[in-house]
Image (cartoon, rainbow, N blue to C red):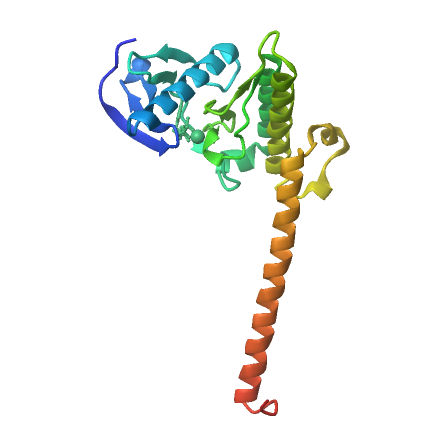
Length: 233
Ligand SMILES: Nc1ncnc2c1ncn2[C@@H]1O[C@H](COP(=O)(O)OP(=O)(O)O)[C@@H](O)[C@H]1O
Ligand SMILES: [Mg+2]
């Protein structure tokens, strides 16, 4: 596919640079591998895998159409404008319930097509359209179910599907897992790695909280001693 020409820089990520090129109906997003020889080869391979994932999920609502790979290995996609996922985006606040239903259905449709996204925890990979609809991007880390694939592929795919739905639960409930509605419990099954990360995060929060409280008490005591409200040590 011919390069539609120079365009507007959108982002630079771990797969390279993303540009918006062309105008009107010809507007396209081009993901271009960058870096030295080895890094570039690796990124081109990731873009090839991303292309294979897009080929399977074409037609699912809120996922950009894929126009193929260019000769230099760049991936060409439909431009779907939106804001990176953030709690404070007004379109999300106004349509929260619908947004999460649509996002869940998108994820389930991906899985049915044999694609697990596996990187939904990165906020820039979920956009919110002006109408409050979810847009899913970046299939660079996707796990594809291979027909006739062995137990390893099945296991990886299954784990990645769980990670996708866990990410959905995390965003929907803002990490307040105790609020999980009975109908959503089926979607939350932390993998061993996620479970461990959660424990580490909790312990760290507790420890740093304790340290902060201790420092605050010490400062208060010193202030009172300075002001003569307490006897000196
Ligand atoms: N098809 C697209 N439509 C609109 N914006 C896009 C599209 N593809 C990428 N972007 C923008 O570029 C950013 C990076 O793209 P992404 O595919 O996540 O690349 P990376 O692999 O570098 O993270 C996204 O967060 C989004 O803002
Ligand atoms: Mg990304």
